[in-house]
Length: 184
Image 1 (cartoon, rainbow, N blue to C red):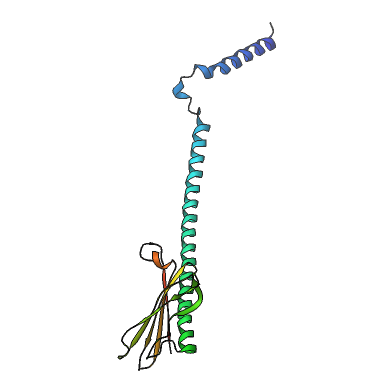
Image 2 (tube, helix red, strand yellow; image 1 turned 90 degrees about the horizontal axis):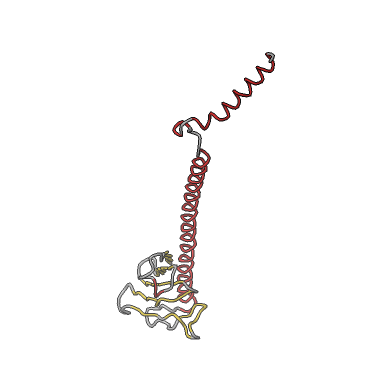
């Protein structure tokens, strides 16, 4: 056997030894087994944490935007109530110091009947306060008080608007109130 054949045979023996040597090493030394599973678990938990945090931010944004919308509806209800009282006072003298006009209607009725009634305080003393009963504007509520006084300003219209109907103001935890006041 020449040297070349002997070197080739030795090389084959070494390759065979090292290819089988992996199985001769104890399990404690095989540290790279299961690395892919660990990496997949790590990546999925990071992705899940990011997804949960994005969901929580989105949920808070939806709540904030709905609060802004409800606040605007409450303001619209208060403004509508104040404008109604102003119209009836200026055009029809509905809140005169003698006898108030009743009923007052403002662009809506309930079952064909006006939905606003007027109650008032003492007609013999100032200030005189007229209270418009709760009325519903769509699904929103407004409470209006008209106060007549001898001092300037003579008339004050204070309107509270709510983002819910009149029956659920006390029980709805998300009911918002906005106010409008007109003095003339």
